[in-house]
Amino acid sequence: TEVAALSLRLDDIAPGTAVTPAGRADLATVTDRLETLRGWTFLGEDAKAAVATLGTKLAARQQAFVVERNAAGAIEALRSETGSAGELGRALTAFVKRFPNDPRAADFTQAAANMAWGEAAEAWRRAWGSTGAVEPTTVQQADQRAAVVADYLTAYPGSPLKAGLTAYTDYLKRFSAAVGGGAASGSTSGSTSGTWESALADFFANPLMSQLQYMERSDGRRFYVLGDIKRQDLNIHDQITVIFQAIDPKNAAKTVPVLVDPPLKLVTETPADAPHTKLVKAFATEVKRIDASDWDTWGIDAAERVRDADGIDPVVRGVLLQRLLKAEVVVAGPELGDAYGPTLAALARQQPAEVPWLDSAAEPDDAKKAILAIIAAMPAGDQVKATLARRKGDMLRVATFEVVGTGVLLKDGDWTVVCKAALPANGVIYTVAAAGASGNRAVSATGPAATPGILIRVGTVTDGKALLDAGALGGVVQGSVAYVLQ
Image 1 (cartoon, rainbow, N blue to C red):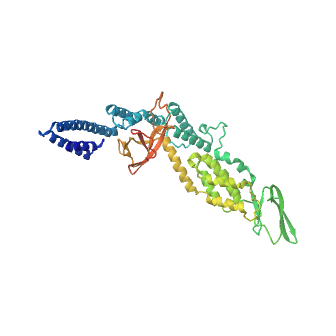
Image 2: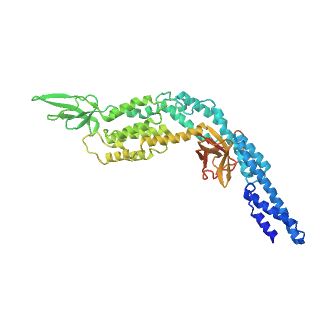
Image 3: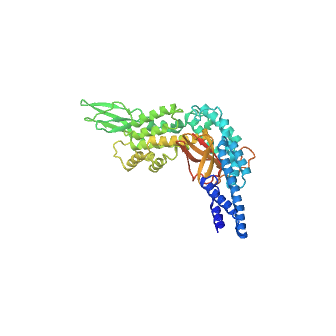
């Protein structure tokens, strides 16, 4: 019958379509036709009963449409309640109280409880106050910033920024250690030597690395020497024969005499610094001047100079690189990632420090060729610096927590972020969630965010448009606060 058909059509009007033109049009069609049927006086009792039942069903659906429209309006109103986590939490609670049967009510209830984490995160900016730039330029500034972090985490032990601020504290320690001590470095020795000086001190003190010289013969043969070479010039039949003491290529602790007979002669009248000696001396001077401008990149630049130093024996280059890269990994820390991991692993297998190299006349063997291949495969310094800058930027973004937009995460098919103000041109979007949980959960806090929370990166803003990562949002509830950071 027509009443049955109208009932089915009413059933086909999907919940949540009250705010769509199609939904309103479908409901108006059923309403108009029902009014026509009510006006028919020739209907039998069964037909009248069916019309009455349809009328009751329609009234309920119309009421549901009113609620849906009101809820949609309330959702739109959330846009103006996203100035802070506390403000958003109160708005979500009011929404649930007004629309307890809304399908988003459970998520909103949970999200409102989770706002304690957002409030803890926002408190960090107040705690930071006028501390200044997040990157220190002196050890004293690093100590000051580390103290601010420590005080904040004492007050907010469950802050979702804890992991990021812990990483920032480690960064401050490494900065202070690299530029020369300070409370933030954790040093108790009172030494003002930086990480670079300390890490390379024994290397710089090794005479074979920092004092080695050579005497060169006219046939191109070089002989490594240290200290007094005990040179003797002998005039034999009006021809000069020179004898001097050179390092024994088989045992660096011993010397052997070198005889230079005519027609051969010496190209170097006095010992000259070996190519690597010049570089090591330069390094020893430079590490004393490392400061905020190069503390975590000096090792990258030094490694590039070793790579380009073709005049240095491959084995010595391998030894130099191994020491420099190990120190760079310690200084730059997690922000460096595994940029030099493969190179260091390959050098560890090759063990350049165990490979003989003092015989300059020896032909390159398999070990030297392998070391040269490792050096050639090392990632370019510019590439490593770019990785370091990107990863450090990500860490400092969280530590700074410079919010340029606060909003709410909603899902209507696809996820979206709704903010009071227009989104910035570019930024990164974060939300808060429970530490160690698959998604958010309610907070039962005895203090500010006492239950641990974490900050999750869920998307980016590019050219003013939010691009959300559905995978990252898998465990996030609707109504969660969204922070857009520069």
